[in-house]
Image (cartoon, rainbow over all chains, first blue to last red):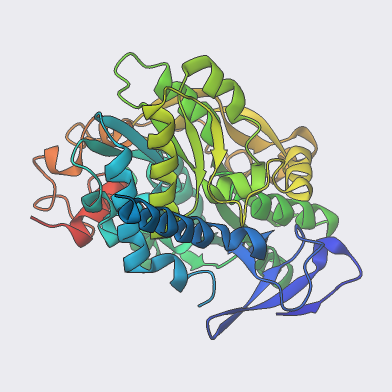
Length: 76
Length: 361
């Protein structure tokens, strides 16, 4: 993502890479985002920055489920 | 793509499904509110991974589907005016009004253009000062920040040749309307992740308390939906009714504050008619007083049109979760995405269109 028009938050735009397809999106509502962040985009507007730590949690949960499963199988 | 592919992992999906099977002891009816989730559920066959006695009821969260017939007719009337450039998201073009649709109007010479963002319509108005540019502002809270900024920018730029036909709708009043209906079979909700990315989920706490229904804010990928269902079933099985957030990577409790601030500035909450359901109090957004001059229906004098919906279409019952697409005699025969009777067959997010595309039998 590259960012233009940074002076006024309401006109701030970014070039967003959707797996190879690059589109302009308004960054008016995500003043905190920087180049390299992942964002959720709807009708040309970034609405939310993806929280990378939270994004991992479902996988941690599934891993824990596995470990619990192993534990159950190991008990006589 | 990162944050996408890993949430479609088949093996992990099976694991979540197995856990849902393990914790489920009773039949439960869970409504996914959002059409985007309905599309993913049918496309990936997520409902077929679930225990037989868990029913996913497809909710009214498809903006194209719930836009009333009379608003489509208003759009058609405005688009037919000489000098008008009528702009819209692509999925509204094939939605049938009472006699025709915008695509057919375009074929007959109306200047109807598809835009990707409402800001593109503002740009068109700037570039074409001698023309009237109208944007068809349809959508839930997810789209409202975009239309709000377009109106705000048009006002800032002093554009007199820009207006909007607005039919914005709100999710929490629709949930309330469904829950207060005596026919309601819904026992829990998957709330729409992207709506909550904008609005947060404070509004759901009173609903959970009043109706004792679990509401789990859920994302759109298969693993999101399965985890949302699991969290919901865990609540139902233990008699809890709480607001939980599965989609934490994108949704914070308070939502997107700058977006909410602009929505409050440009819009006010109004009663809104939902196609197939009827009027729901305080369930829509209309322009606030300072921005009322941007209301296209007033500018073009089409506000008073009233029309009835086709009798055969059961879209209303489908949108309330009382019927499935296969229950309709016209489904897949006389009513298809090419010749839709009602809105649930038009939009790719509509339940009928999703069933037609992925599950024709």
